[in-house]
Image (cartoon, rainbow, N blue to C red; front, side, top):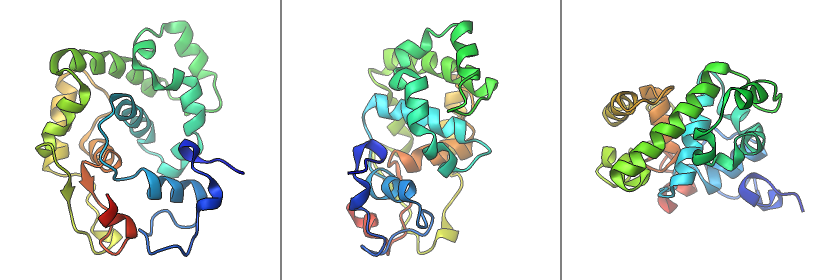
Length: 202
């Protein structure tokens, strides 16, 4: 049995299973991500931090590139343990810069370390990152009721507000477009097109 993203068996994928959003195309990892994760309301701090990291590294790149390297990121960044990441020193930064399995971008690596520290500060202030981040959608999922992929926003008033506050709290690589991609991943917005079988499920 082949195992894919988050342990979902690849053989469960049926390209003709139901109608889905067009963007995964026929890529197995993209389909797994679309069918099992994208748009599902997320309230686990560790997973929320993982998506913050991955979306920051996606800046200027395709999501497929990030998914292809996701497990390498997981290994390189201690399973996205923000407490460990917050303590990374320059030696660890150099190690990450020499890791061909991830995106070797010094600014993004440094931002990840700084974001881990800011993430912990928010937890201390709000009790959890989840309690903090969902305030931007009034603690509910925004359903954009899209008819076509071309209607998908790249940012919103909510992502603008989120970006502004995150930057003020010391985060890097959290522009409005990145914040909107994070909102899509974390299920803060439902951008599955209405004809997609996942639209109603999430």
